[in-house]
Image 1: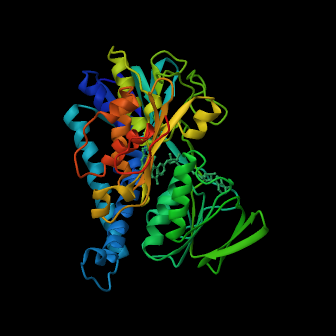
Image 2: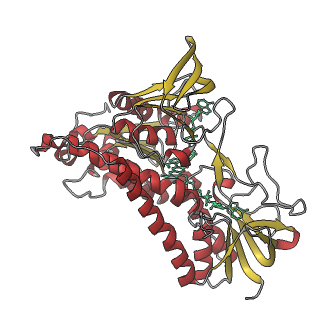
Image 3: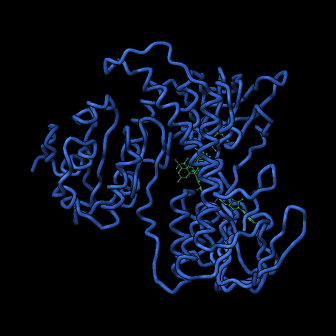
Length: 478
Ligand code: FAD
Ligand code: NAD
């Protein structure tokens, strides 16, 4: 094997492995370096997303959603009794899905001719890449181009140091194999809400401590308000303005969590505690002092709009650079950079990145929130349509939530679509396509949606922007 490549990608998460496959498809001689190995020393591909992120969390969310639906099946006339969950089997099913998918990437690398280099990659000056194996031995390679795709790791906080089996980060949280009677979560962000939902559905008493005094500050306020109301009904006890000040493991069995909120010092005792306070870029050991690549004050690799670092031919993508820490954002950046290297001029549309929280109902949005637009002084018009008025949602017995469309009053262009609803994660793709094509509200209004579908709520919300929703009283004064 020659030691010179057109492209070396460091990291085989959804940013790196997708970039490597795309580059190989475009005819570039490509290698991908990955340091993650399993207990037997075999490479683990797919990064956070496939191993300890998107996929395993969604497997658990799906299993527990099915469990909950079965418990409520009598609304359809289906008689059930004593519905139980085998938690160990649920976790084993999750592990099997992860194994299938991560193994599939090795197959895709082989099929596309991507060379896998096992070990920790380190970038040196002159686009030289050193690969350090688990036994400490190192090999050296050169490339015309390098993509840094080293991802992120969970943030740890001093008051809640991780303790095997009791105080867990997101990876440990995915391996809980017995329903905790009392679950504590620090951080009411995406992981906190998704993992909290998994265990609340199985009967855990879930308390989530959130330092901010606003719930889901990044979401549209109406969506966040509706979600807070629904989560309360689901018995997720979300305490805002609650800052963890310390933890104490009692008899190796339970955890005392101390915190302060508006009323003063408090404490709760839980059987497991998940720390989900955000993630930070993983760049330790990635760059030699002479690499020339720079980072910002929070450790994110500095890149321009097309993911170029300051060093010609060196790019960085995904969770280790600015922007939302999302798998699809990482993958699209990987594709963009592979295309750029192959000589095509492409760019990612950062105004149309979908965000989803996979609770039930799900929260999903794309574009700006009403609050952001008002702060910017934009003149906007909005339309909302509740799933309670959707025939298909009624048939599915899944009527919580709504779709909200925000458009520019002057140009009619859609500026944001926000929703909370049963299958919002699927509906949001329509909104992303609309925004990617710079649709006006009228474009969406004049588009034919199949009946009866939950998607009709997107159509009706667009009609509601001008007071024309058919299945709702919403006439606007002219
Ligand atoms: P990563 O997936 O972190 O991959 C980086 C890879 O690089 C890793 O395999 C790492 O071992 C390797 N690496 C690092 N340094 C080196 C080195 N020096 N040499 C060799 N290899 C190296 N996002 C969504 O869009 N949807 C979701 O539903 C979702 N759910 C999530 C649930 C959880 C619990 C978590 C934790 C995250 C979730 N995310 C989700 C976020 C998503 O997982 C990340 O945004 C995504 O994985 C980032 O991709 P990446 O390729 O940049 O980095
Ligand atoms: P997050 O940023 O979504 O939420 C962290 C929350 O913790 C915030 O609300 C923050 O205010 C709070 N917090 C921070 N410090 C705290 C403290 N000391 N005490 C109490 N609360 C505190 O982060 P996350 O939930 O850890 O997820 C990490 C990343 O993974 C996110 O950026 C997200 O994009 C990604 N992710 C995405 C999905 C998805 O797309 N569905 C799912 C899971 C994770």
